[in-house]
Image (cartoon, rainbow over all chains, first blue to last red):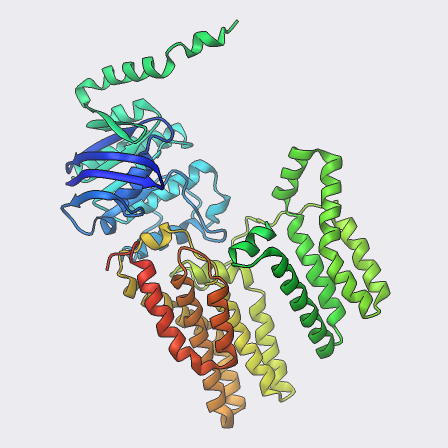
Length: 226
Length: 296
């Protein structure tokens, strides 16, 4: 379980998260959606302990950060580190040694090549592989489907479902609604740092329709496409 | 960008340029005093700096942003500015032909682009414990055969000082791997206390640097057994400086090491016993700086 109580975060006078309260249960996946700048990444960074904040974050296994697999939107790689070394680095950091690479390289990545030479999608797949091999209890996946090919998206969806089966907690942000509706049990909507809505799986269809209407509005008509 | 870097170091850019120029003149004087190959060293340094400016991605960006003619003009001006101090020092030392060749090469080099990122993966003995030594080794692997060759020369010409220089070169290269701070994620990801984190960093660095330096250390101990105390003292000093730089890096974390840390390290170069005070100082500061990312 992860419980967030009255979480607020400001950068100077700019309040980017306003009194957020959420609860995440084991064996479930949660979607965090919102426009760019809504505060999704900041919320994730606060949960991970990468940002200071006002409010409280509890977890049943402590310290939370030591059991958290964090996939950043745009993972950074050192210039001369191979895929294998990157995985080793992240696993060693969590005390995991004697790793079996070949059988666990499910995305067929060229692990002996420098990670900096990978494409955007391959980099993301490498980062996902590494946090999976860390054997975490909690997962934060910030835009995991971005830049990844269709085949790998299918694998990734199945991985998230498997993590739920294994009683892990998975938090996902994505701009592709179908990826969330396939995997999540609940979706939290953020708008300008405020938690505007929390929607259960049975109401995802309505939420998608509502988001479509709000987002599109009359924008397309304004274009007067001919 | 240079202005920004100087400002980040806590200096007024004008003062920074002045200090840089003074250091350049003094260093050049020193090199010309010490070796007859100084002119080649000056030419090589200048060309290697210009080589970096010719990096393919960089020149492609200039080409797509400014077009062919303006890109060429920018590249020629850049290379010309870079070569001014080097050509000046060659002219000052009356190497007229060399200065002319360097100027000519600089202008010709402006029309070339080079890939700096080859796909060839250089093997490293430090792959099991990434990342500082595994990535650093790949960037500086060519230095190590030079250091070993210097040791062989030192033994052949019976010059222990040269052997110790080769030995210290290894430590100098090793501590360069710890100069830049890594992204927060790579500290955060460790399930360790700040104490354990620093202990592991220092232990791995010492182990890896010793592994590279051991052929030199053993050779010197075998050929100069009477000087074993001196050799071991230099080994210990090398290790202490390595620890100091690691701790200094995290004492300024997540920022880069700046003037204060640099000055403290420079002072300890003049008086190494100072390290016994500096190391605990940087250690305590590092622990405090890392607390926000690592659980105590």
